[in-house]
Amino acid sequence: MKMGSWIMLVLASGVASMAQAANDCADYWQKEQSYTQGQTVSHLGRNYRANWWTYAMRPDRVESRSEWSDLGQCSYPQHSVFELPGEQLQALTSPSMTVGTRYRIHVRLPADYQPQRAYPVLYVADWSWLGQRETMQALLMEFEGRDVPLAQWRSVPEQVAEAQSAGEAAPVILVGIECPDELGPCLVRRSRDLTPTHSAAEDDYIRSWLMPDLSPTQQVSGGGANFGRFIRESVIPSVERRFKADPHQRGWLGTSLAGLWGADQLLNHDRLFSRYLLNSPSLWYDNMATLQRTASQSAASLAGVQQLYLSIGAEETQERPLLEEYATVLAQRQLNPHTRIIPDASHLLAPAQASRLGLPKVYPAK
Image 1 (tube, helix red, strand yellow):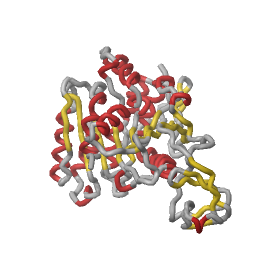
Image 2 (cartoon, one colour):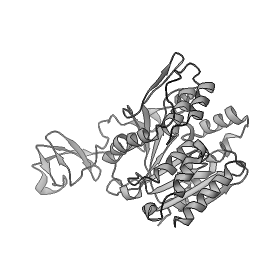
Image 3 (cartoon, one colour):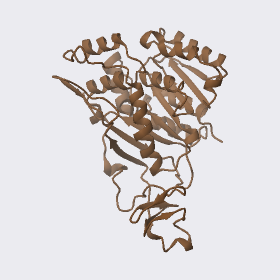
């Protein structure tokens, strides 16, 4: 089963590569940045090319015409895609499987996108799973044996669009992080990249289930810090160089292990995000290490977190007490998360509603 084949990059149907077409808008002009001869920028829906070195001169002004050539109107595709090599990550290889480091990045702009406006950006993990309703349905059947009609599903981008269309949530730029490989390597990636600590039990589980011929000395789990470097050094700069963004409203949407990664990221003094949607976070991982670490924090150390939404399926009976304990620990530190138990939902069914319910809490309409 190939995840990459599920998320088809059909350029003819509104998905554009970040390798620019002639009329695509370039990286947006930034006042604090200098530009050298030949560089192209966009400003207010038009592209401009620098005639020589220039700094702090707005391309559209009359007095800037000697420094900038007007290349004409440009456009932003509603959905664009590019790939990043993931040099910060460690590839895993065995005779039967290669687990790579490249990630495919999807950028979806809000309706009526205005290039001069600085938007919040919501980064979404597991786009291979959550970016399209067909993949969500397929994984439920694969792992739980349940056939839920496609009409009852909503992908994350569909849920976000519905919340915004209903006037309940503010517009955001949505950035999906997709594993482009087959299902097996994508599952191993999750254990490698989304776990904040190394767990021998997790490594044994991966070997017994997915990579039995992996060297016994090869560590799999615990690469969360490397994944954080990848997000910080590669993903965020690539997105926020092209599209004008508000870094103070940057958000993370993580489900399962990606929710655990978000819960760990929330504790870092140099945290990347200020708003979090953590759906069914795997707080059980490594003997609840992240939950225990959270309990050791002071209220002051969490002061930079603006909004936090937690959700879990009602059928997740073993994990639900952990989420409730986590919410209590955070509330004791004045964070007061929004918490939602999703009725009649399992671990793989809860994502069909979680983002629709959570987005208005984390990015409420103004």
